[in-house]
Image 1 (cartoon, rainbow, N blue to C red):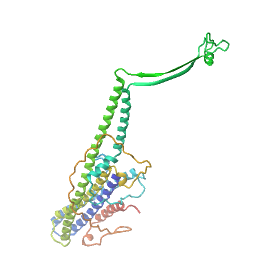
Image 2: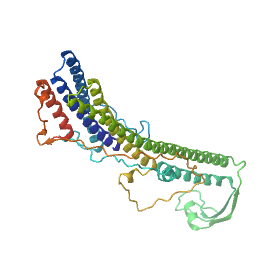
Image 3: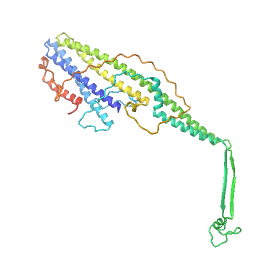
Image 4: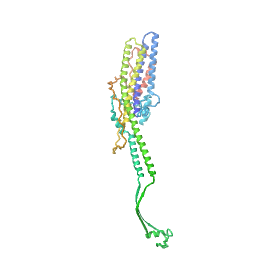
Length: 419
C-alpha cells in the first residue's frame, strides 16, 4: 500500500510538470507564429514549436490516464520494492483504491497529502543490524523451531539409556466350567461358574519386582538421535542463512537510501541550472532578441526532464527509507502502527552466535538541499484563469483555443478533482 501511495504521488508530480511544460510550449508556439519574420524561417521555427507542443500534449494525455502496467511492488529488485513510476494518475489512483478497499469509481480523485522528506537520514549500521536480527519475525519463528528440535534431540537421546522399571501387580482370578452358571457349585475344586468363582475371592495373586531392559545395539535409539541431529542442523543452517540474507538486504536498503538522497541533491541542482537557462532564453525572446529556436525548445525539454527527475528522486528516497525500516523489522512503528500484547516476547537463547557486524563505508557529507521555488498558479472557482491577451494571443488560431480548453480542462479535473 505504501508503494502504491508513492506511485500516486509521483504520478501527480509528473502530470504537474508536464502540464507546465505544455503551457510553456503553447506560449512559445503562439509567440513564434505571431512574430513577423522571413516566411521561410518563420515556417521552420513554427513547425518546431508546434512539434514541441504536441509532444508535451501527448505526454500530458499519457500522464492523465496512463497504461495498465505493474507498479511498484514487493520483490521487484528489492524486498520492499523498487520504484517503477509506471502508469498515469487515473491508473495509479485506481490501484491504490483497490489496495485500501474503497470504491474504485466514486466521482472523486485521491491526491496524496504527505510530501517525501528531504532530510538527510543517516542510519547507524550496527544499531540497525542488531535491530533487524532481533525484530524480524522469520528469525524469531526459526528460533522457536530450533528450540523445538533441541527438545526432540533431548528426547531421542533417552533411547540410548538402559531401561529400569519398577513393576507391581495385584489381581483376582476366577475359574469355572462356564462363564456364567448360577446353579452349579463354585468351590475351589470344581467351580461351575468363572464369574462366581471370581466373586468368592479364593484365587488372589500379587507381584512386586523390577525390570531391566538393555536393547542389543541400540539401533532404534541411534536412528532417532541421528534424525534429530539432522533436523536440528538443518534448522540452524536455515537460521544462519536467513541472518545472512537479512543482513544482505539491509545493507542494500541502507546503501540505496544514501544513493537516493545524493540523487535528490543532484537532480535539484540540475533543475536549478535548467530553469536558469530557460529563464535567460525566455527573457531574450520576450525582449525581441535573436534566440535560436532550437536552443529555446531544448531548454524547455531540459526543464521538464530535470523537474520530473527531481520528483522521481524524492519519491525513490521515500521508498528507500520505507525499505530500510521494512528490512529492520520496524515498518509498523515507522507508520505509527503498534500491536499491544500483554505477554512480552522473550527471546530464546541458542548456541548459534550472531554473525559479526559488517562494515559499510561512512556516508559522505551531503550538499545542502534547497527548497524548490513555488510554482505560481492562478485559479478561480470556474477553472484556470486565462492570461492577459497580448499580441501573440490576438494572433492565436482558433484551433489553439479548442486545444487549450480541452486539454487544460482534463488536466485540471485530474489535478483538483470534481467539485
